Image 1 (cartoon, rainbow, N blue to C red):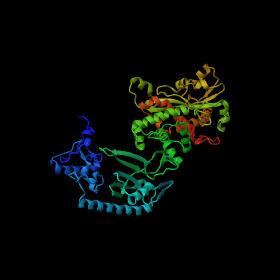
Image 2 (image 1 turned 120 degrees about the vertical axis):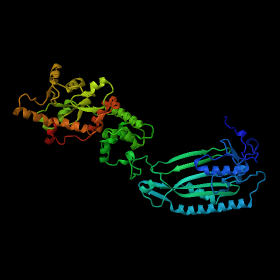
Image 3 (image 1 turned 135 degrees about the horizontal axis):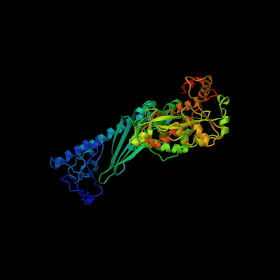
Length: 546
C-alpha cells in the first residue's frame, strides 16, 4: 500500500472535517498510541471515538485524530492530565467548561504540591561518595523546578520529559551497585496554564553500567516529543578509579592480586602489564584490550572451552575464539625474541655450581614431550599422529633449556609417530651447536651422536648408560646419578609447561595454531622466576627422572 502523504491526512472522527492541507498550523494530527506502555491510553482513545463513530470502529495505522478534540488543543502523555484522552466532540468555538477548568486547576495544584515535596527531598540528596567515585546531583534539576514554579509560562506549547537518577543519602558500594531510585518529571505548558506530573522513588536494579544516553523521537504528525534517557552508574573506564564490586566476575576489574592473576592467567600482574604493552592499541570495542589479553591467558592457563569463557565475558563462543587466536598471533610476533639461543659466554657465565664439576661445557638440555589430540578425520592424519607410547593421537615437540633453566629452543609440532631422534635432527637444533658443546639427554635419543659426528660439529651428547648386563655396575650407577642430577632442570621446565592446561589436549580446530600455542607457553614459562635459586638443586626431585 502506498505510504500516506501528509496532504491526505484527515481526522478519523466523523463529526470533524479537519484536513491537513486546509487547517491552520495550530491543528496537529496524532496517530493512535502504539507503544506497549501506552496500550491503556490507546484503548481509551478508541472507546471515545467509538462513541461518535460506529461501535465496532477500529483504527488503522493511517488513522489520525486532530488536536481540536483535546483540552488545550494538544495531546498529553500524562495520565492524570485532562488532555490524556480526547474529550471534545465539537471543534467550532469550543470554550472550556467550568468542569474542565476546575479539573485543570485541581491538577495544577496537585502537581505543584508534589513538586514542592520533591524539592524538600532534593535538599537532602546532595552527593554520594562511593569509594573513589563521587556522583553529584545534576544542576539542571534545580533550574527546572524554578522555571516550573516561578517563571511565567510561554505562549507556545511544550511537551518534554526529563529523567535523572536519585540516590539515598547514605549508601555504600554494594547498595549503589544493586539499586537506584529514579525521578521522572514531565511539564506541559499551554496558554498560561501549567500541567505537570512527577513520579518519584521508582526502584530499579541497574547493576554496573556506564553512563549512557538514548534519544527517542515519538513519531506523530505535526509535533515532536523528545525523550532523554540517562542512566548514571560508576565509571569503569579506569581500573584505578573504578568501583570494585563485591559480587560477580567483571573481567580484569575483578583481579587485584598477584595470586588471583596466577590462578586465572598463570602470570603475575607485572607480567600482565608487560604483555599488555606488546599488544597494539585497537579502536574501542565491546571487549577492551585488557580483557582480550585476559581471555587469552585464561584459555592458556585453564584450558576452558570458548563457550565457558564467553559466558564469563557475556560474548559469543565464536567471538571468544576470534579474540584468542588474534591475540595469539599478535603475541607470537611480539614475543619472538623471548625464546632465543644464547651464546656460549652467556651460558658459561650463568652456569650453576652443580654443572661446574662434571658438565662445565654443557650448552643445552633436551627432552621431548607429547600433547594429546582429538581423533583426526582422515586416515592419513590418524597414521601420522598416532603414538604407540601414549596409545593415542598426539603431537610431539622438542624442548631445550640452558643449564640455568631458560628455555632456549622449542621445535615445531610433529606427529606422535615421529621418534625423538628424528625430531631432533629435523628441528635444526644440531645446527646451533658449536665444537666442544655438551648436550644432555635421556635414553630416547639414540643415534644422535652419529649424526653429530657425521656433520663434523665436534659436540658431545651425554645420555644415561643402557643396561646391557643383568644389573648396572658401580660406575654406571654413578654416571646415571650424575646425569639425572643435572637433567632435573628440563623436567622442571616440562612441569612448568604443563601448568598451562591448554596443552592437556588439542582440538582439531587448534592444530593449525599448535606451533604458536606451544611457543607462547614457552614464553610464559620464561617470564616466570628462575627455577634455580643460588645454584641449589633439590636432589629429592631426581627420582622423577626416568
